[in-house]
Length: 112
Image 1: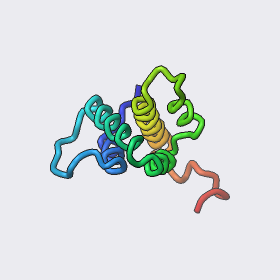
Image 2: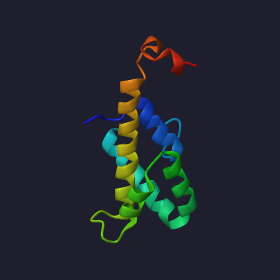
Image 3: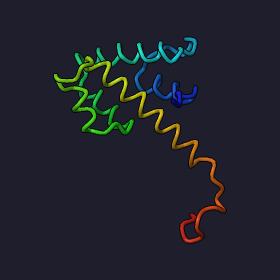
């Protein structure tokens, strides 16, 4: 399992306004709990903004609908937090896989 790196954690913290700048970096478990709490608050008080954040974080709509479904075994806030964390893991894996490719490996017609 790929865990989010510090820059990924910082992105989640910034996007979801989880901590003050003076706060120490949380562990992954602490970050997940902070995210669950924040999403719970947003579900009750600012659902439109939450949906906007999920969209900006590239969380797929059908997964959001599954997370919000009454048949989901997890509470909505936990299910959505899992989706955000998983999407960040996917982004990190993609970045590691493709971010280090040298431009010489790209076909000449596809270069900028």
